[in-house]
Image (cartoon, rainbow, N blue to C red; front, side, top):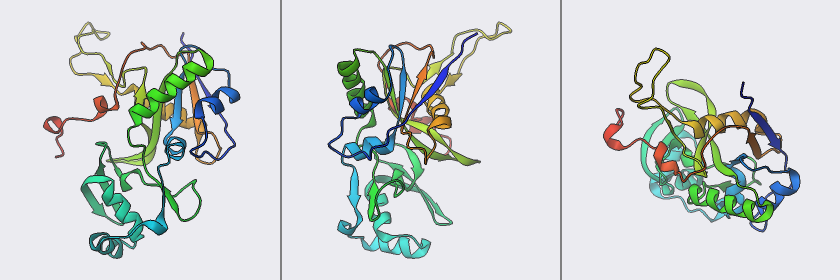
Length: 244
């Protein structure tokens, strides 16, 4: 029987651009080879300076019009538009967009929670690169080989509630492909792929929470192959998207 551990790492400090997240993690917890670190997007964005002073944002006429119609802050709407490649749906005050990264999510991942009043955080510019840098720094600090997943909370079409999703990876493939293997009745599986990076992110959320000052968790004893991966592998190509 395989038992997988999910271990919260509490960091009390408010993260800013001067912090070394790898050191904060290693000082708070003893990392082991083969650990998977699931790191909340918010602290990565804060450390990388992806924080916007809303007083500096000048809303366009389009942003003002959308904001007026949906009773939203026009400055937040302007940020949503600037971080998006297209609007997928606007209804009931909710703006679903495709971000520059290719993610379909509400408000382009822009968030005013867990940040001081008058400010908002954006998603990291390139979460794969953020994950790679953190992997390297953890190796430098601890001499341990780990995988890193950057996670964020997204809603889901057709289902209530939000779950954590991977938005950046390093050290593992985000998809586990079963195609060509046999099921328990000796039938060949042809298209089954499991989004393990998303499943690991959701598992980590069970101990991370939103108000527990736990922006990092360790998933230990999960068997995986250390290999290069990219979050782009989780984004369905337009040619295969039945909803476009």
